[in-house]
Image (cartoon, rainbow, N blue to C red):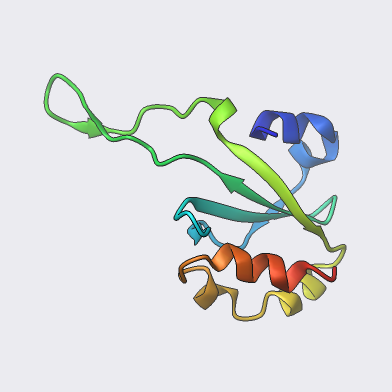
Length: 113
């Protein structure tokens, strides 16, 4: 589902605080993911987006154009009600997030939750 469909599916998601667990998780194909935990629902989701193209304006300045919402996908990988429980499951995530295919490690850590 795309990011808008994710938030539309449960109104608690839009109003909830979120805790970020890294913005640079890589999957086996090298795609970047961001991991966020939605406080009110207990959902840990991975948000993936294609690499942003860098474009040049007529004056030679570079910028990243807005990403179409349909290209930003979300996958709920686990539901963990308590933040302390999630932090225990993900102990060491800061190191793992930078590893090639760290997303597999993340999914493995959460497979029993």
